Length: 564
View 1 (cartoon, rainbow, N blue to C red):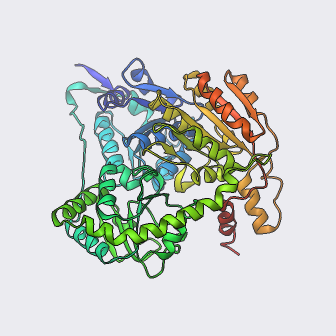
View 2 (cartoon, rainbow, N blue to C red; view 1 turned 135 degrees about the vertical axis):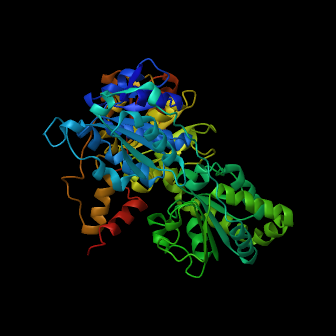
View 3 (cartoon, rainbow, N blue to C red; view 1 turned 45 degrees about the vertical axis):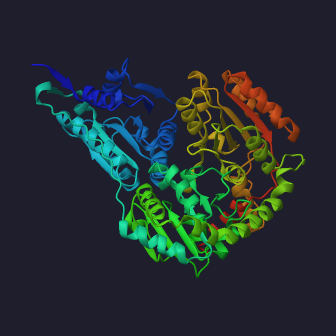
């Protein structure tokens, strides 16, 4: 009678699902899976830290809209992965984390790396699964992938005790388990009501978020906006679902971004939120005109109404709803009438947009030394001007400056840490992007604090031949915390906010990469040109003005005031 092991069944199930990469760091409790993945169609991508492995899987899920897969060993391997899982949960990213653990026969015996893992991770994932029988491995793999993708996407935790992985089971006793679920629920009645509200509005605003990207609704969003003539702002993974260059797109939804966002939110009489959450980014709903009507569309019912009363709640897949709205508009011939109606509102926002950008021009064009971070962001934005260029942003203030500046032409081509706000995503995200798109230019801009968390992922990039370009906005420390303390307390606590000059570029050179040291604004572009032409992983260490305070630092100072 032919038998297979649990570890072999894990490997075979992943191969059947056409998983391309497993992001991982090896360990004894997952070796029974490794031995069957080796030399298969699935490639093990080994990082230098489990956190980096999970961040890479998160980036893969964000970029592909299919589950990224990470695999870690028991105990410390598991706990090292938790930050990445929390980030994926907040970003609604499909991800499957596979972890080994101590064998069932050795529980509570003080075996190596023994701990109760499932209760720890349960609040951070859509579902936890612990497989106790080798014969059920294919079923559990199937459940994990279905859950990660269905409804609102998110991470799923799948645990295998090592003795289950080593256990044998009869091949003939197994059942094929592989189900791919697609669901696009739409509320037809609410689609009619949305259009009725739009026809009564004078100054509507659309905010398109991650739900647009995850539901693959980029074309539907553009058609909806062009049919109605309404202005649209984009947020999180929704950035680029309608290009920033589109005449009806007013770029990023964050009010701190130079442009017309703040003016739009204060004047609007109807806010249409498509697949994004009303949280800190919108001052918990307080940034919108108090008299404005609110329409919120989300696939997760309990998300609707967070922080702000919603007049028209719509539980629906965003893409399906947009397609239904577009059908109704075409059938009723509403398009031209709506576009004419909102033309004055668009003109008002165009003026506000220009005024907002004019206020930021001095910073974008600053010739100051040390370099103004906004000038650095502007130089990167101008250089990364191809439609398929990918920019990754990491760091507190640094990600803020880039988010205030980046022009996004295509969806899935800008990555940052989103609302969870975890530093250290930069190098793993950039490596994942370059792995997925080897033909595209990938540039990471990161702070000097954040780059230290996963610095050895430079070595991973070099070892795996991933020629990313990393620009460090070096303000000598933890700038966002330093500035928020100065605002809050009148001074910064040196311990914990000051790092000082570190020659990160020389460290990368020591690993085998290329390094540049930049002190003047006019040196930035030549460094970028040489870095990308080199074809090797490169670090550009840019000395930035440590005194410049970002809007995010000001906001953080207020966070510190919550308990006052």
